Amino acid sequence: MRIVTWNINSLRLRMPLLAQLCADTTPDMVCLQETKVPDALFPLDAVRALGFEHVVFRGMKGYNGVAILSRAPMQVLEDTPDWCSRGDCRHIAVRYGTGTQAIDVHDFYVPAGGDIPDPVENPKFAHKLAFVEEARRWFSARAMRRTVLVGDLNIAPLEQDVWSHRQLLKIVSHTPPETERLMAWQQTGFIDAMRHFVPPAEKLYTWWSYRNRDWSASNRGRRLDHVWVTPDLKDALRGMQVLRHARDWEKPSDHVPVILDIDA
Image 1 (cartoon, rainbow, N blue to C red):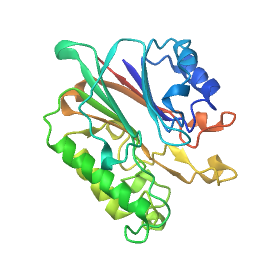
Image 2: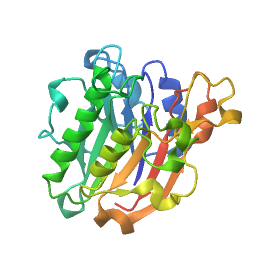
Image 3: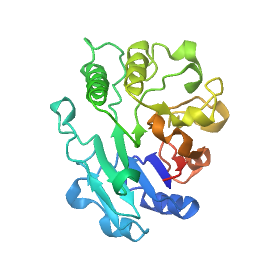
Image 4: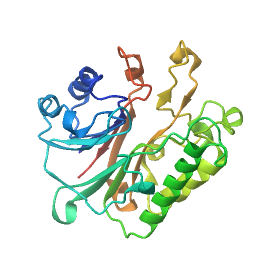
């Protein structure tokens, strides 16, 4: 099974890039974040034309939004929370397959948190911390099995997940209040599947700012996109790729897709 996760930064704007991604990588499932499209306007016919007969989505006008596209049937998991009681379309979950071999897939888009890393001065940062803490509590109360969690978690937790650990310690996405909470969430029962393949001592990025004129030369990246799996799937992991070249596509997202290959 090949799963792709990607913050597409507007699905309707980047449908041609989604088509290119699917042609190049032939995924079985695509998990999207920041689709920026209300459900009534979701381009369902265009998505199905790519070979995904099974599609679930939660979206809203102008921002947020998540979607899961699958070639095989899947069942929406309905018992997920309305995170922070916001109704802001940041999570969707499905069960892929049946019986004991089924896999649960969670697709998340965590709040970015604004620019000021102070929950008192910045309500967006307070919301981000509350969201991650609520997610930690929710998952810690569950006995999970055969679960994959993917998405734009908007936090680069490790020193080598950012271009400069020292310079970004006070920059939202790498501050200790964020990284500590994200790691606590991960420790509710997940393995970092990306770092299973790329050692923590090596640089690993999935996002490069639009503000960098030559993003590749400056290489000031961050790993904001993640793939976690429960330990019972560790031996099923077969490969992982970060599609860095996608950052050079015409009118790209500032995030690049991440591929996970897993026996399922």
